[in-house]
Amino acid sequence: MTKRPLRLRRSVLYVPASNEKAVAKTVSLPCDAVIYDLEDAVAPAAKEEARERLRDHFKANPESRCERVIRINSLSSAFGPEDFLAARACKPDAILIPKVDMPRDIADVADMLAETDAADAIRLWAMMETPKAFLNVGQIAEWGETPGSRLDCLVAGTNDLAKDLRLPGRDHAVLMPLMADLVLSARAFGLDVLDGVFNAFRDDDGFRSECGRSVAMGFDGKTLIHPGQIAVANEIFGISEAREAEANAIVEAFERPENRDAGVIGLDGRMVERLHLEEARRTLALAALQQGG
Ligand code: COA
Ligand code: MG
Image (cartoon, protein in one colour):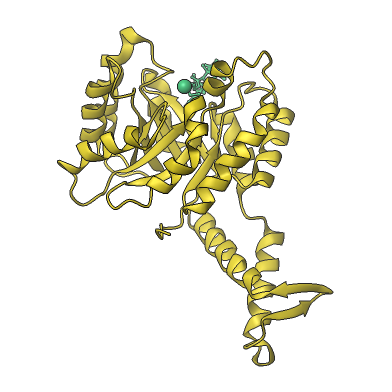
């Protein structure tokens, strides 16, 4: 499995690139990543202006505390090729490809990036939001193992998926079996995976409970539509003090001379195996990133 650097992706905010105020605001928001959107959130008549805004924004802000991603229109659409050129010129951390149906949709963008970005600096994220994406989810994630694939993160697009599946309600809980497949495929090939958005951005209780379900399913973080959702996502997908303390206790227990060669030990009345040590080290590394950020 490809080893990827550990990154915090608890809170990943979409920002319509056409919204000048919102784009300017991103420099001070406490989210882990921003997705500047040129696709669904931007009306056709505003596409060119949105691309210009991103060029100006990245030029004025060459560095950023948070990860920066640009979502382009599909290369096969009328806007895709221009979006791609604008996104590439901004040198974001990643380009997010919408409506991926199969590995080829990612490979096409990777091939175009390879022409100018030999250092592989720009990663690729893939929107998983079509029925075909979910038929091919394992293949798509596995394709991330291909040298030069640049694939780093899968992003659930639950609004598009619900539309294409013709789900009558707005209750995305019915998508859970597909979301479980998505997490499974991401984990099988070492990719990060982000849950879809929660549309009712003033419903704090509903959002909190959806984040709880999402973290329990194994998602790394949640895509967001409003700055008011950042704090809750950071809290729920973050490492709590209690989890950090538990992880420290596990590491310390395995470091004791009598446990150094043990495969399994008892700690506070619970069985702890060496596999938990690996998990505890990851938890502590994430906690350190959280404190540094
Ligand atoms: N990113 C950055 N800033 C945002 C923001 C976002 N996603 N959403 C809202 N804001 C800002 C607004 O600009 C506003 O700033 P101001 O106080 O300086 O004027 C402030 O937060 C409060 O906004 P609010 O009035 O609560 O929301 P709204 O009614 O203006 O906007 C949405 C609601 C849903 C239209 C807006 O949040 C949005 O565009 N979200 C992203 C949508 C998107 O990208 N969808 C595609 C992927 S699903
Ligand atoms: Mg969409």
